[in-house]
Length: 166
Image (cartoon, rainbow, N blue to C red; front, side):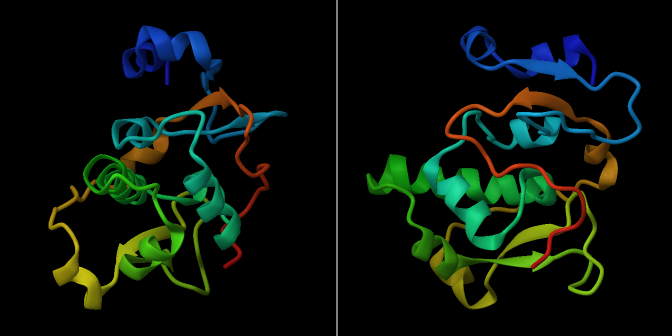
């Protein structure tokens, strides 16, 4: 993504808080010390930096990193967080989230991919209990639009190469 692409994603207040750099002419993400790699679609689906305790707890529990998730997973997390905070007036709760969602390796448990290899999916038995919404079915093009952001405190798990281990 170019500098102007990144600037279009964030407002003035966010620009003052986070530090980012573009991924100019790189064929894949290479994280530096104290950096994370968000994707344009993650921001469009509600990812905010710095992240919440709830989000960091989920990543730590499942042993995954930001780049292992998909835009649809970020959307599920954003909607759940908004539901809890704005409508139920409670902090997002991990066990309640697990009641509705599970982590599914993508494309399979034996061969998860490095970027987007962990999808959050709504449990079939919970569909009648949760909000109905139809996330868009974007293809893999989202993986081509990344940039680098300083890993602010409290930080996300340190980056390690490879697919999700769980």
